Length: 490
Image (tube, rainbow, N blue to C red):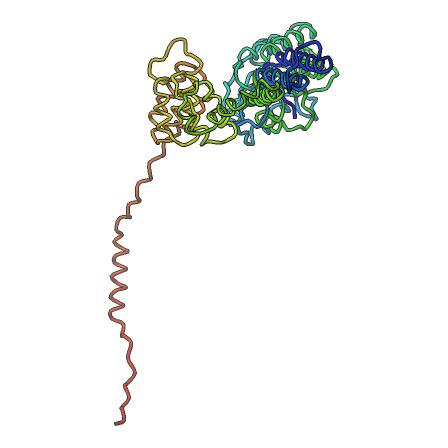
């Protein structure tokens, strides 16, 4: 299991200080004449305790990140090469364009839970087609309206086009770039284009996953006879570019949907800036507490007088009445509630949820209320954050507050109120992916009115005459005759 850290650089100074404390403790143990020794003091254990304390502090500040993602989520920005070179028929009898479209058709024919897709065309620059969303039939239909070489600027500019595609990606969401191309660069030298694209993608923390089409030998490009062109696929350039950005080249026949699900659920590594792995600073806190306890136990006779006081303080901290009587800082309550929510303990999260007026504390309290299905409590908590006139520019807590309020209104069967909140969010943050998806779910097609009942056919005179004739015949027919009754013997 690979453990990531939010701030890995903090591990090195904490490790150096911990090693220094351990060395000083060992030296004081081996050379007692260098310092004053008290009764019961054990410098080596004290050094070990101080080393654990420093290491735990560094580990907590570095924030180790691991575990399952609670809500799988990934945005795949699909960049499809739409230049004339994609019309070369060197992919097992089909053109490169047809092979790329067939790959996307297979991808979008099945379900991709938690994954949104955007579509951009790559020519001399990037041509946006569809923003991120989950409407896969619309994505498939959009490809039918594209003709390679008939849209965008002439030529293939990997360096400029991929840089434009990276600039369109949201920098705060988990996202990758999927490039389907033959790898041929015609606007600038291939080495310069690769360097430019790799620099922009690394700066945007956007790994590139590529699928190459075509053969690495010159092939004639279909077109007018006077415009004789040839095209040579460059899968090596795509492979090197993917490796330099943290992605990779997909193998022939590999299912992209399985890769996207692994990325969305945290089973495949993502850049730390786009990762949704939960942080666990409590690891460092427990290690630091163990080091502090070890240091106190090895401090010798002077610390024995403090042990009853420390034990009493620990007892007061663990007892429930005292814990409720002594107010804790809201930041400490928020940390405890977040830790309880991460491990699925809703009762503890409800007990420790913060009650302060800070936006972050209100968002956490509303999230806990939604998980506990207390939708009205969530709305009351979010009311100060979801007013009709929010601050400008919109702060980062505004969008999640409106989203959670809309979900609470929908759970309370108030779709019109939820729709109003989502429309307000889209006005403040145009193109917000989650708000667009939720609003599309609410704006379903109206149910068609039921068909009008069929009117009975008009009376048919001939039919009524026939019925009268049948009734007359039935009356004229003789009825059933009973057999003669026998004579009873007396």
